[in-house]
Image (cartoon, rainbow over all chains, first blue to last red; front, top):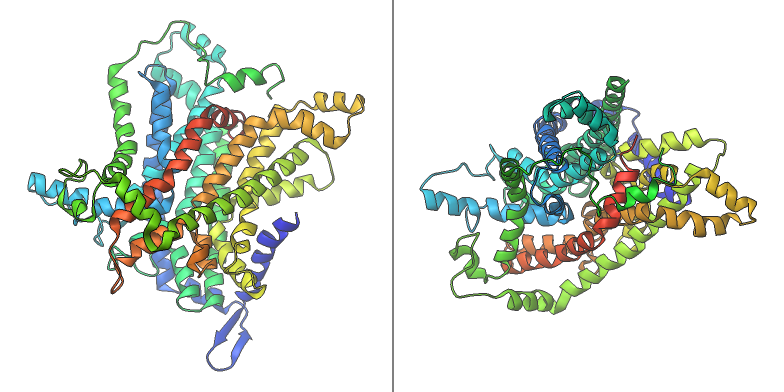
Length: 273
Length: 304
């Protein structure tokens, strides 16, 4: 509990405290109340980043969870050849650190010795550069999807395994087909797992940092210092020394994440009853 | 609620396939192929990594990405160069990572087990409050805490030391949550009462009754905290300046960035080989322990 207080409660309290101050070149540090918050809410860079993770989350999370759900249902159906091989292999990318995943995909995306370059050469076509400003967000989305499809698949699969088999037998006697079983038994039974996976994916999207920060070196024109709110907070502290403002951004992001997670949880649970 | 009679069945489920349909489902080639697409998506980048770890720096640019370069198979040479480059700094980073994992993930798991067991099995005033705080903690983005933690630690003189990585790693709200739900399911309260009636002290009850029943959950939490610490990038990035204390994630990134700085030696082949070396231990751990952690996940994390 003491450790918990030191690494969890104290930083939150401290971060709220410093977000109320401002350090100026002349006059030093002074109490400014909510001025930093006002500044953040009118800061185009902050909104830009928030908007970007918003798009990311609306597009990437459903794709990733959809793929994971399909894989989980397929493996659970008992109709796959080598189902356990599928299960463990699809899960493997989760063991790859985000740093390695970003470096690896970064190489593959590159036209120097990347696969994209190879494909362009082999087919004489021109796939749009994944590291260009237009495609960079989709490219990052692909990396994140690759990393976490297996993890989410496993969460869904575990939830599917604990459905009592008597339900399936009853459905079969009633003449229900596979799709009917999926719709009426499997999906409702794993609603809890779906809600949890959605919440964790949303938290993950809002925290997006590692992938853009690694790819930044490969795509300096496409990734700005305020690419995501988290990256912005980091740049403000460690390149700009604006600790107070950075703490403010971090707090706002924490609040936004908590509110959205809470809303999803409420909605998910209400549908359940 | 899982009762004691059901618990062993759940644990052995992934090993022994339970027939759940009255008629045995036909294996479907179409479905296997369709799911195979997702499998390929997961596996091809890993194959790319393995294949390219066998190439020289020149071979990387000259040859097709998904096949070996003509006449060279330099995996062993690349491993040797990775381990010896820059006075063997890679080994140092590896040991650092190991230290952070053993102390951080081990400690986090220990605290999560103690806390989860306590919260699940003891009634005390304020339990509802603790629950709210833990759920809140799962939702708070870890990175939002990093900047203030950095400022606090730098005032305490802890930055640029291993403590700056280990102490924040000790708390895993998700691990605590997982352990809590798992303990709720896996340990019947009657069993604890029986142990108490027989005169067993709380600690003895915990170690002799609680720990064995919790084993699959403990393996699960340990693996997830290990992955979190092994893969940690943001925290070391802000806490550490001295490359001697870097974990592998920061080290590899530094090597990768070397190519874009002026005068830096381009060592992409070592970055690729180093990446491969870094992911092997985790993949091995997942494969070796899969029977245990998968059942822990099934019984603990997702059951409502």
